[in-house]
Image 1 (cartoon, rainbow, N blue to C red):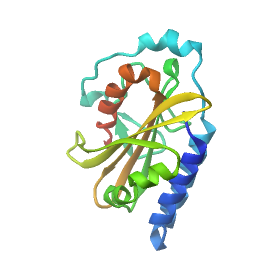
Image 2: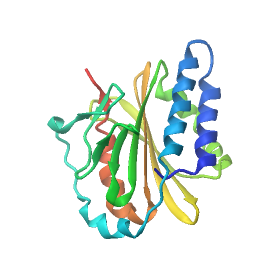
Image 3: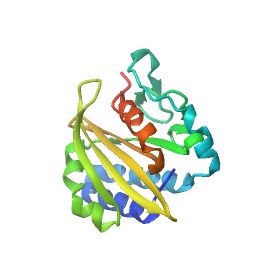
Image 4: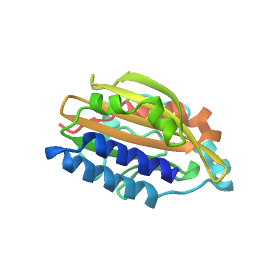
Length: 201
C-alpha cells in the first residue's frame, strides 16, 4: 500500500480523537488496527508496474453476482477484473500495479460525523493535498462521500481514494491507493468498484 506514514498516523489519531468517548472507544481501537495494516503493507512501484499495467481492464460493469465477501468484515464488494481478494489487508490487491484497496468498517458511527471532521484544513495540516470531495450514492442506495487525495513518498506521486459510506449507525471505510502515473487506467474502475461496497445481509 502506498502510504505517507505521517499522514496515516495523523488521520487516524484525528479521527480517534474526534470519535472517542464512551461506547466509541472501540472505534478508536479499530482505527489503530487499520493504521498498523496500512504501514505493514507499504510498498513502492518497480519496473514491473509499467510492464504489467496493461493487464488492468479499462471497463467496469456492475454485476451483483460478482460481489465477494471481504475477509474479517461484514462487507462485500465487486472487485475490478484481475484484482485479488486479500485476507491480510483485508481488501483487494492488484500486484501488477501495486494497487491496494483496504476495507474497514466503523460500528456505531455515521459517515456524516466523519465527513464533518475531514476538512481541507485537516488534510493540508498533514502535508497531503485534498483534490476533491464528492457526495456519492452507493449501488445499494446508501449515501457516502468520496475523497481524492494526492501525496508524495520518496519522490513517487500517489493518489488515494477514500470512501466513507453507510447509514446513521455504521460506516464503510475504504482506502484505495495507486501510483498517480496509473491514474488514467485505474481511477475510474476503482471508483466504480468502491461504489459497490455494502454490508452483508
